[in-house]
Image 1 (cartoon, rainbow, N blue to C red):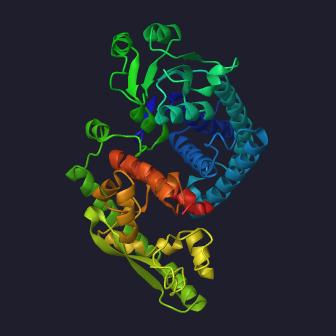
Image 2 (cartoon, helix red, strand yellow):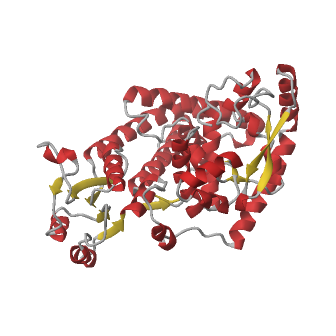
Image 3 (cartoon, one colour):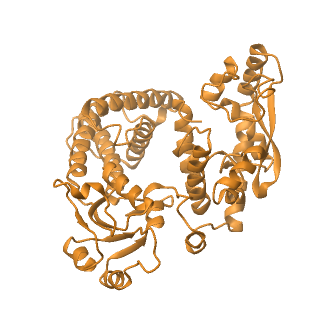
Length: 463
């Protein structure tokens, strides 16, 4: 497994992305050879750099059109449509870049020929990769020990996600779980005792055992697990493996001891300094660049409905310190006169006409750049909540108070991973992602979250 941005991915997934980049790069060079009429044209360094620009642009467009979400491109028709859309957008962007910087053009008409070659090569590459996934080639063999809720979540995720990189070869539990063990069609071993665990693992060429027992006291097969461990088989706690696999925690299942002894939660002065510096630089730059657009939005709000342009509301920040968070007003001024504080809904009747548009494209959040510049918020972090809801949630949800150990953000891991939520259950699920972020936060992870946020805004998903 490969660790990227504090999450673990199958190495073959990284090979898939890098391989596709190599295919695009080679397609451009082949197109260059076709234009020159040479099978092996001499490639200068400057030409290779220009080809890398095209490669990077194409892969960015593939990412933003969900072509690296293998669940959405499972059939050839969907793959072809999304591929044409992505390369079409790449063509338009490249045309604009060439118009502004004509010196970086490799050759007139090259990209058109390259697109044809890219489509053929990428389609073939992805068909071959899908066959690898369907056959489970290079999957890591996995044994689940126990029948806790986390174990069941892991079981379902591995079975339902074809690119998880794992293959369940055995379930060992003293309970009658899973139900599919009674079926004759299962392709894994079911055993209802811990006897000969290590022998089973070695026979099935298992690389990892995930321990997910409901109760460990007097139930943990220490001798068998120790034997497996000294024989080179990884033994990993269920919550830790779940975090690696899913990119979130389960606050209702983890215990304080696991949080105390697990890795993460590093908040060094250097890391805080870099994060704050980047927040200041980018918030100030964006406020200056977006000033004409901000004035246009302000005028639209004023013409659309009566009331102030900006809406300010007290939110709870780092260390539970209250601050005024700013937004463009997207609701009527009397929105909570009768109801009091309530969560906003997706199709909330209190939202104005221009407010619907602003919320879809996150335009209403732009004034929070001032909160970032002022140091009350960061670009990335848990979304700030109102004290009215915080007091309720902190009593209901375990570890909810831990989210106040960092600054709230314009966007966050929960927002790009889960989307809109307006209930206690949604708040629990978002906390699962927020705690993962707080535990594993880094500058590189912030960059990934911002990139995903841009994707969310462009396609109008989530909230």
